[in-house]
Amino acid sequence: MAVNDSATAGLTIFTSMRKRSAFDANADGYSEMPMLNGYSVGLNAFVKPSQQIVLEASFWQINEERRGGNALDRRPDQADQSEYRLQNSSIAQLNFTWNARNKKTSLQAFSGGQLTGRTHYTGIDQANGWGTTRNTTMQSGVQLTRRFEWLRMGKMELNSGVEHLYDVIDDRIPGYNFLIDQTVSQLGVYLQSDWELTKKWTVLAGVRANEHSLLDHWVFTPRFSLLYKPVKALQLRAGYGRGFKAPQAFETDMHIAFASGGVATIQRSPDLQSELSDSWSFSADYNHRFGRQLAGITLSLFTTTLQHVFVLTEIGQDTLGNTQLLRDNGGNAQVYGVTLEGRWKWSKWLQADAGYTFQRSYYSEAVAWSDALPAEKRFLRTPDAYGFANLTLLPDQRWSGTIAGIYTGPMLVPHFGGAPGVPDDIVIRSPQFFDCTLRLAYNCHLHRVEQNIEIAIGVQNVLNQYQQDFDTGKNRDSNYIYGPPKPRTVFLSLKWSGGDH
Image 1 (cartoon, rainbow, N blue to C red):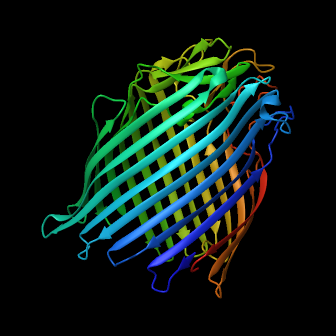
Image 2: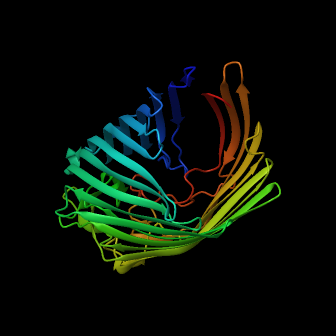
Image 3: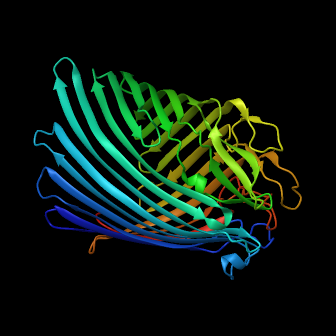
C-alpha cells in the first residue's frame, strides 16, 4: 500500500494464488474434491481532491480452473466421468462521496460491472457435454443522506436513493439441448429514516419500490425496527422486513449435476411467480463491563413466512436419458427459531464467543423432489440445530492462538440412485458434525519499511469429522455431499501487507 504524505491519495495492489490437487476420499478413482488452480490480482485506489470529496476505484481480475471426476491426466471429454470449469472474471467499480461542510448532508454515487466468461464440460462416457457461459452485470446507484437535529424531537438520519441493476446471461450446452438466455433489469427506489427519538427510543422505518423487467407490477418491500434501551447495558429490538425473489434464472440453475447414471439439469416453469418473504424478529442484548473484563449475551427470536416458495421437483428424463428438474412455485413455508450467543473478553489475554441456533423449517404443502419417493414437508439440507465457538489467546498480540469450532446438527439429505449399492432414490438423515480448527499465528511489523508479516500454522477439522458414505463409480450422485468441506488438513500461511501496524 502506498499513500502520499498528505494522505490525499493512495494505491493498494494485491494478488493471491491457489493450487489444490484433487482428493479421492473413498479410493474409487473419482474425486470428491476437485483439482483447483487459480489466481486473482487487483487494485484499490483513492484520491481526495478536497476535504469534502473522495473518489475511489477498484479492479479485480480472477482466473480459476476446476476439474473433477476421473482420468484427470486426460482431456475432460476423454474421461469416464468429468466436470470441468475454466472461468475468467473482470470486476471494476467506481465510487464518489461528497460530504457537506456542516456534516449534515452527504451524497454517494457508485457504478460497477462484472464480465464473466466460462468454458465448461459435464459428461459421462465421453458425452458431448461442452458448454459456454457469458455473463455481464452492471449496477449503479445514488444515495442522498440528510441529518436533522431537533431540540425536543431527537435526531434523524434520512436516506433516499435509486439503484439500477442490469444482468445478461447466456449459458448453453448444445449437446444437452440446454439453454439459459436471459436479460433482466431491476430498478429500485428507496426511502429510509433512522430516528433517535430519545436516548432510550430509536425507530427505523423504510420502504423500497422495485420494478423488475420480468414482472408487470411494482413490488414494495417495507422494513421497520424499534430499539429500546431501558438501561445502558441492555438493548431490546423488534423488527419486520419483506423481501422477494423474481422469477428469473439463478446461479444454481446453471449447475449441471451427475445423477441417476446421467446428468441432471434444471428447467424453469413458464408460470413461475415471485417468491415473497415476511420476517419478524426480536432480540435482547446485554453487555456488562467489570474491571478488565467485558461480557455479553444476546437472545434472538425469529420467524419467516415464505409465499409461493421456489421448489425443485423431478419431471422425468429427456430424450438423451438425462434427469430433468423443474423449478416451480409450491405453497407457503415457515421458518422459526431461537438463537443464543455469548461473548467474553479478558483484557488483552483472552477472547471467547459462542452461539447456538435451534430452528424448524417446513412447507405448508409437502414437496416431492423425486417421483419415486413420497412428498416431504420438512426442508432438505437444513439442520434444526447449528452453532459455533471461538477461543482466542492473546488477541491482537505478536503471538496468538485460536481454537474455532462449527457445529452442524443432523439434517435430511436427498440421494439420487444409480451408483453401486444405491439402486433407488432415498433420503438419509446425516450425522451431526463438529468441525474444529487450531491456529497459531505470529505477527511482525517492519518499522523501517512499514510492512506487516503474519505467519500462521494450524490444523483444520482436527477431529476429522468428514462424510463417510460418498458414492462410488461414474454413476454417482455428485450433489450427495454434506458435512465439513474438508477432511483433517494441515495448513501453513504467509501474509505480507503494507501500512501501519
